[in-house]
Image 1 (tube, rainbow, N blue to C red):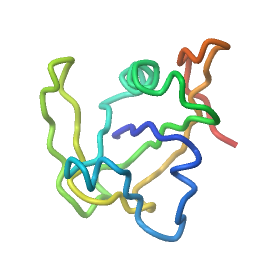
Image 2 (image 1 turned 90 degrees about the horizontal axis):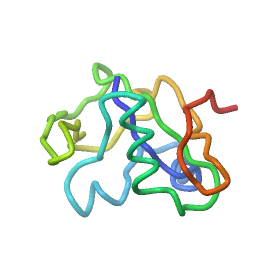
Image 3 (image 1 turned 45 degrees about the vertical axis):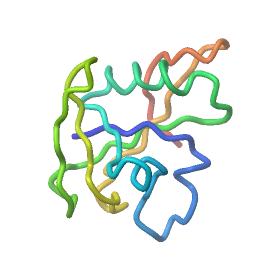
Image 4 (image 1 turned 90 degrees about the vertical axis):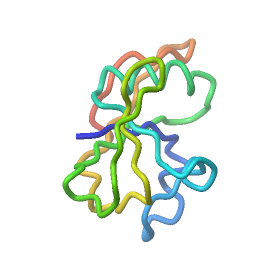
Amino acid sequence: MLFHVVPLSEWATDPGLPYRPASLAEEGFVHCSPDGASALAVADAHYRRVPGPLLALVIDEARLGVEVRREDSGDGVFPHVHGPVERTAVVAVLEVRRGADGKALELVPWA
């Protein structure tokens, strides 16, 4: 499974279409994490000050119709999805529970 951190406001945009974050147009891929712990670290490093609910999409790589490459970012090896993410590939949506200071604490089922 792959994990992708996204603000709820972005995930909720165009729910009938494949998910296309800004990074897909800007960099040619969707940033992902290899596990929940890495997703929490990404949330803490890059989304601490982002307001509103923050989600972690759990993506079944086998359901993607596009290439996934694992690339060394200097902070570890991270999967990059080279194309839009079909919503049917998202097998779970978790919420990033954050502390009062915005620190990512844990992943919990999103209701």
